[in-house]
Image 1 (cartoon, rainbow, N blue to C red):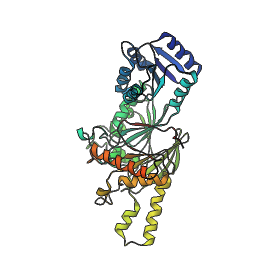
Image 2: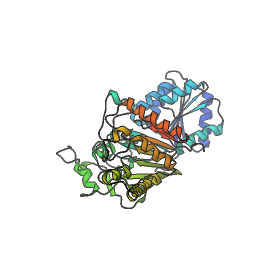
Image 3: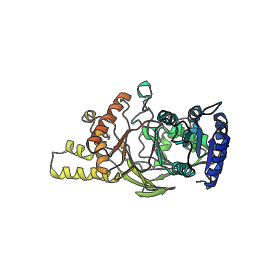
Image 4: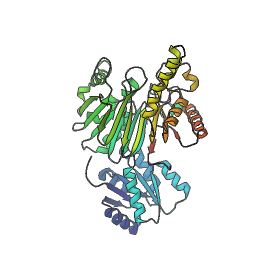
Length: 424
């Protein structure tokens, strides 16, 4: 992580306010650049590489709404936090700014401490961003346009810190964005892989930063049954399947097999555990600055399989319950539980033993774990947007019936959840 001061880009057309922004933010120890309109802001963004952007909404030549939309359309502008500022603070205007991509809204006039507190909060906030949310196989098309069709890829972000979870087809767009952000400077990136089924590694050969000299990529995942993790990744890049070999990646790529259930990746404290899915599959629990995310994208309850394989008895029921309780404990008090929720309860009756969970059981795990939020993940490739809407509705209904403390989200490609503490 760079130790340079955080850079803030301010776009403001009023001269006196430009001076106030410059003085206040510089007094907070930030490196500040101030420009007059959105067009200048887009040019300055390319060269200045800010960590936060602050933009007025009503400006000549290019207003703030246009600027936010244009910035979010650029690969290098996908992840940067944006604060919208305006004296026109109608709720509808605030909602529109957020819909276009702003993270926060600050009404004019503002107090010095309010501005500094908002900037500091954005730099410290842990965000979970979804780049691919679909299970089993990519499913692009008009029927999946709202939730997305790419296979699993998630990032955990805080300021300049970044951890990548899984390398499904969503990794391709993430790589494009990261390389655009870097502007030729070396990157050090970290990736956790839950298992090596195709939908969790197919994006790896298309990860642009892995082909750039000077970059370093550390990949962590479970040891395979027959071959090391590195050989599994290398295997999908065999000339019979792919024109570029793993050895042709110009970055410094290091593959680590996870043997210790607790390890450190940069500032991220990681715990790993095996879960019930065909082959060798891990779930990860990641902690950062008091924020906890549990990522269990492919898993199936033990108790149902035991019921299928054995005559019901107390010993079998007790064993299955204990094994399922391990996942509950792994997600205990998580700020976000990213949960396998591939099947409907009705579908699961015909798909036991396929290694996935029905979405109502995923919510039950989140409730038992006292998680604050659950993201329904690994959407079935046969489920269109309307079916995921119904999944979300049914799960939210269950959470409400049980007291309403649990926030239920359906993971959406491009969505970023900010994990600031919730009210107790």
